Image (cartoon, rainbow, N blue to C red; front, side, top):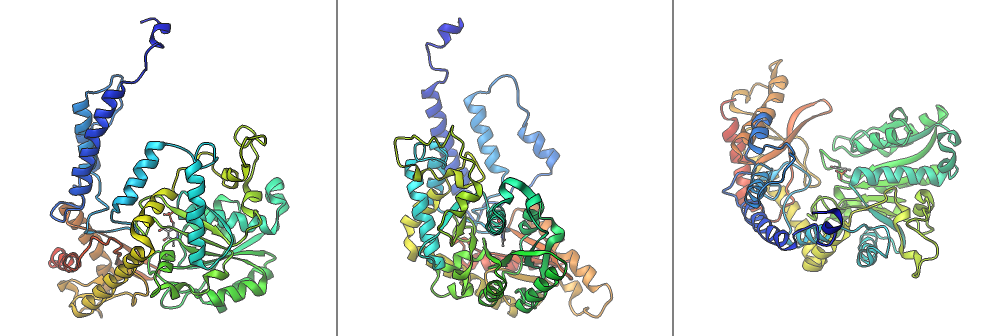
Length: 493
Ligand SMILES: Cc1ncc(COP(=O)(O)O)c(C=O)c1O
C-alpha cells in the first residue's frame, strides 16, 4: 500500500486488541490472582537463570507472534514469577493483594496519564491532594504539602534536598559552591537510601554521621547530641537529622520527642523515615509508636508496604505550607506550565517534583481506602501486629527457635538452631555454623516453592530470618506451617 493510502486506515486492530485484553485479563485472574493466592500452589516455580532463559525465549524478533503464542507467554511469565500475594510469601516488607488497589493500578495503567498538570490529570490532581491531606492529618498536621514519589528511597532523598534548600536556597543555582561542608545524622539502623541520597545529592557518604542505637535498634538521642558536637568541631554544618520509624531489619522506632528536642535546640531539619512504620498511625492501638512524629519537618511513608496498595505508593509529606517544595524544585518549563492557561494554574503541581512525567500513585490507595474505610485499614494493621504476637509466642515455645530481639513492630527476627547445633553454643565454630543455616533453609524452600522469607547478617549477628506478615489473607494455619516448614527443611543440619 502506498504511504498515503496506509494513513487512511487505523494502524491498530482495535477489535483484536480488545479480544487479546479480555483473554489476557482472564489469564491474569486465573494464574496470577486465583492460583497466586492459593496456598496449595507454589510461591515460586524456581528455575536457574539459564533454564529460565531457555523456557521463556526472551529475545525480541523482527516479526510479531500469534495471539495464541502471546497468551501462552503471558501464562508463562506469571507462572515463573514470584507470587507476592501468596499467603506464604513473607520475604519483603510488602505482600498480599488487595482487589480494589489492584483495580486502581489497572485503571491508572489503562488511562496512562501523568500527574503533572490539571489539564492531563484533572481527577488525579484533585485526588492526590485529598489523599496527601488524609495522610498529613494522621501525622497530626492541619496544613502542609507533599507529593507521591517513586518509592521511599526517593522520598528520603527529597527530604535531604528540601532540607538543604531550606538552609541554603542559593544552592539551587550555585550548586555545591554555595555550601559549607554539610553534615547529616541518622542511626546505624537506618535504611541505605540515606547513604545513597547523600551520595546522589553531592553531600557525600563520609558526611553522614552515624548515631549509636540501643539493644532494640533505637537511636540514642544523647549520642545524636554528641555527633552534632563532633560535626561542628569538624567545621561541618549540621542540616539534617533522619529518624526512622520502623527500621528495615529489626522494626525499631526511634524516640521522636527526644530527637525533636535535639533538632529544635540546634535548629536542624527533622525528617522521619516512616516508609515502613508509618502505617501504624492508622491504628489507635499502635500509633503511639510514632509519638512525636507531628514535630517532624518532613515524613516519608510507604502505603505500598504495610497497607498493601501494591508498588509503588510512597508519600513524601511536609509540614511546610509556604511552597518550599515548589521553590526547591521548580524549573518553570513553559512547554508544560504555560502561564496563560485557561484554568487556575495552582492545580498544576508537577513543577514541585524532580520528575517530569509521574505515574498516578494516589488512586490505588484512594480506591482501597474507599472500599475498606479507615476502620478496615486499621483492622488490617492490628491483624498484622496480632500475627507477630502469635508467632513470637510460638517461637518461645518451640525448641531450636531463638528470638534476636523482642519485636516492637511486625519484624520477627529469629535464628533457627537445628538439632545438629543445639546445645553447642560453647563451640568455637558455633556462630560460623549457625550463620550457614538460614541460607541453606532458604535455598531449600525456594527450590521446593513452599514459602519465602528473607534472612540477613546484621552488625555482629550472624544470619537470621526476618519474617514479616502484612497480608490479611494469611491465617494461623499459614503461620504454623511457616515454623513447621523451617524445622522440616533444617532437621538434618
Ligand atoms: C525504613 C525504610 N525506608 C525506606 C525504604 C525504601 O523504600 P522503597 O523500597 O520504596 O524505596 C525502606 C524499604 O524497605 C525502608 O525499610
